[in-house]
Length: 275
Image 1 (tube, rainbow, N blue to C red):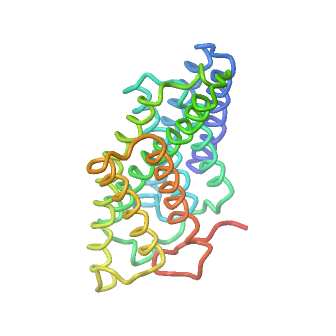
Image 2: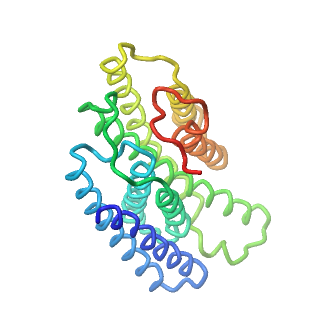
Image 3: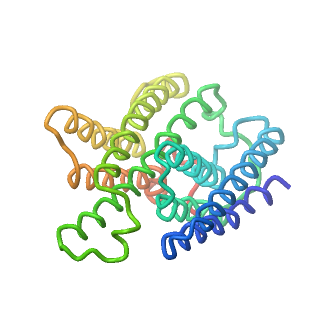
């Protein structure tokens, strides 16, 4: 039942994404309102499904690729809804909701059977480390979408060819502010996630850092976002440069999360992408 419920959220997120895309094409408010409603329904279903899975598994259900991809979709929707509430920016849903649907769809193709917990994962650090990281990743996903929107809007303005998309996107200042706000939320959480992971590694393997592929990729991701934050605070990185770095940073996030599973097994690889 819980597996069916979790997989059903994929259809709900698809409908939400299509309604937001309908909104950006037609600018009819009804599309955005219905899109938000379906995403909210999906979040409720998702939380209920994870609650059922937690009760059945006896541990936080974010320990394999099915659970992780599904949870990532959930927190992306949550981060988007929080951002939309803050900025009243409905058009953002046309860029973020499809991303959440994509990760939810990927999860639906993974093996969903409950498995015995790997001894290294049997720790109270599991929910702290993983949930904090995924929330950081979710705000980076929103930042990524804002970066895409920024580059599209900037191209319209520089080309002095203000097409239909120009009327649908917010100002460059608003998009740059979203970039910064998501960074100030995501970067501290990413830092906490890496620190808690190091402490957990000491408990599990007797070392804080072992240059495991996922650890190395996480460090590279942290350095990109640290450089972006440092650049914004000290040398005035704004606009296009910040948008591009945000896009690169999220691509690194996806590689750290999924791409590592395509490499030879490391300490952090507990599941491979379904083939």
